[in-house]
Image 1 (cartoon, rainbow, N blue to C red):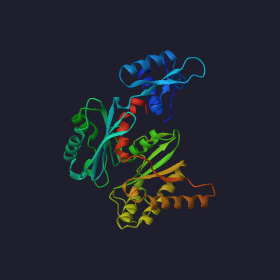
Image 2: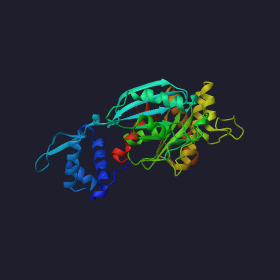
Image 3: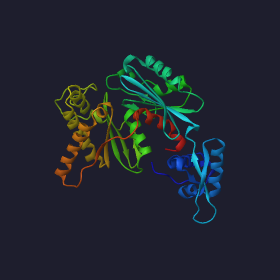
Image 4: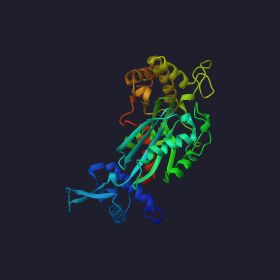
Length: 356
C-alpha cells in the first residue's frame, strides 16, 4: 500500500489521477495542499494544478480552507468529497448474504443482511444478490465487489470447488453478475477482502496474516503492505493444511485439516481447543513467512474474542520461547467494521480509482 511516485507523461495520466486521489483519501478531512501533492508524488506543480482542477470540476475534490503559511502566502488545502461516488460490496457466505454500500472514504452508508443458502444453486443465488443489491444502486455506484469462500480464480472471476459446495466449480460468477447488474464486478476470497480492508486503512508496508474463522477457515496474507494472492490467486487456503494425519474427514476431501478440527471444537463448545488448533496453524504461518502480526476475525472469533486471542497468543509465545528469538509475534482481534468482508469487497471495487 505504499505511495508510488508520479510521472509527467500523457500516457500515465490516469495513473497520476489515481495517485492524487489516493493522497486525498489518506489525508481525510484535514486535506492536503497542492504543493504537498507535488512534493509527495514528484509531479510538477503545473501537472498537479491541472489534475486537481479536473477533480474539482468533477466534484471529487473541493477546497477545504487555507493552511497557515511558514513563508509566502497561505496554502489552499484540498480534500476528497467522499459522497461523490460509491461502491457496493457483497459477502456471499455459506448461509447468509451481506451487502454494503460505501463512499470513497470507505465509510458504510447502507448495509443489509439476509439468510441465504450458497448451495441453493447458482441461479437462485444470483437472483437473491440482484434483489438485495438493486435498492443500493444509482448513478454514483462505480462498481461491485464480491467476496466468497475459496478457492477461486480472482483473475478469471470464477470460483473453484468451494468446500461443501462443489457445484460452484467453474461458474463464471463475476461475468454473470456484471451482466445482471450492468456494472463492473470484481470477485475475490472473503479472507482477501477483509485483509485488503485492513491494509488500506492501516499501516503501510507491514506484513500480517488475517485469520478468518466463520463457516469455514481461511487466511488473507498481506506481505510488505501488498495483498498476496499468489501466481494462481490461490494463496491463503490456510484451513486445509493437514495437522493430524489420522484426523476426522474434512469437507474438502482430506483428513485432519485445520478447518475441520477448529470447526468441530467450536461446534462442541470447546473454544480453548479451537483456539489451540488455530494457534498451531498461526505458528506455522509465522514460521514460514516471518510476519509482523496475526489478526483474527470471523463470526466464530468475534462472538468469543477473548479465548481465541488468548489461546492463539499462548501458542505463539510458546513457540517464541522454544526458539529463543525474542518476543512473540503479536496477536489481536482485527479492528473496526461491522461487516469487514463486505466492506473489503467494496474497497476492492474502488481500488482502481485510487491505484491500489
